[in-house]
Image 1 (cartoon, helix red, strand yellow):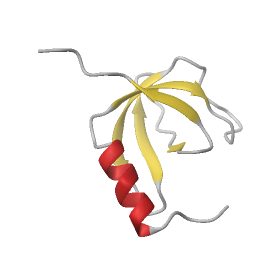
Image 2: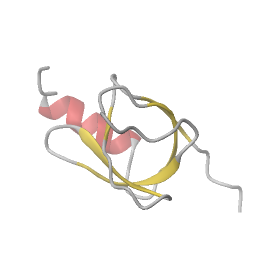
Image 3: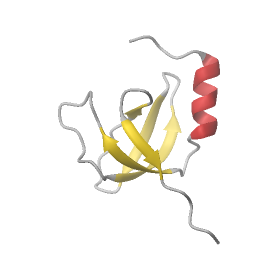
Length: 78
């Protein structure tokens, strides 16, 4: 798997800033994946383009855009 370019990483950082809430649809490359529907919060997008997450269940598995399936949970209106 190739690493994303700096431009792609910056795009991911803009799409998924810290605090973005995400719902997992499917995690493919993990031997012990989280179940679909798991909810977590973005901590950061690292220099390899991994989306580092803090999941409500306490795990800290990262997401890989284009490999794992997930959706952003829209922020509640204020």
